[in-house]
Image (cartoon, rainbow, N blue to C red; front, side, top):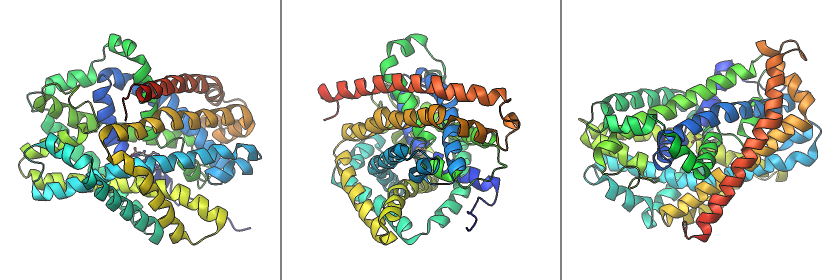
Length: 450
Ligand code: TRP
């Protein structure tokens, strides 16, 4: 038997995982979810969701991956539980639905790159967003983004993109710090920070039913959990790596990028809009705020161009891995030509995504379907599997290579983690699922989406 490839360096693994985590979720989704869900109230629940539920779930996926040394679909079989394979398949399906609308937003980024060069959004940022985000123009840019994604997956230049991402993530951080620093000088900065950072318990309590599923979904989405991608990545890890250590670095870096995006966006929103919490209360938040910022900055066209190109790379490094999930599944199962499958799956994904160009509320429906339903279901299954089905393997595996568990059976932190994944994660996620389905159902029956 040939030995399986492993990451050549620990940093290589961490970069790949951070590359998957950092994307439109951090720079587009996080600010708009925060803006439309009560600001700091959302932020508090989101941070709790990331650290208390997302982090242990990431460990659960890492454990499955490293133990089985398989992709998300075969992993369950390899561990001896082939009737759990559907859990991996659900993740692949979630990746497919996600890519369908992710690509529409990726199309907006393409449009903003062009808009930066021509200066098209510099006057009326809200009007520009409204014009490009829905309708025939949005279908064209959705097609363009999808075509680039298909091309990369079909011709296998993904390596290049991944390598580029290593430079792109530091670039994103630097650009966001710059924008945040500039934002601090704006007249609306104080109001923006207070909305973003001072939580009001009443707001949390009175909007519990909508804040919790959004925050939880955002946490899973931004950490790329539930899709089986982290299972696959961890399958290439060596046994001497500390899973908790790696996971902590990934979670913290990803959170820093999202928080910085908020620091860049909120001062601009509160300086340029009359009531940022409602008018912008939507998916245009980050785009209009950032475009507005570039519109007022010296050399704004150049800055805007650089920023949106960097964002494009972050989005592409995510979209190729989202297309790769269903593609490699079909390739492994049916043994067709890789490029044909990539094109086929990509075209179907494009078609499925087209309705989300009909209007922002259609896009919101796709978003909420993934955030409120698919991700909680996938994470619930993973937690139950690791906590109750493959628990002995999981316990042993978490200890390997980590300081907390070098002596199996005696490591208190590993025990706490296992019970956390057994009890706390499933209960919280199930409750979230209930709230999420209720809020999706209400939206559907009251005409909130269509
Ligand atoms: N985390 C990515 C983002 O924030 C989106 C994403 C979710 C993803 N699941 C994924 C990317 C799986 C790659 C693979 O934009």
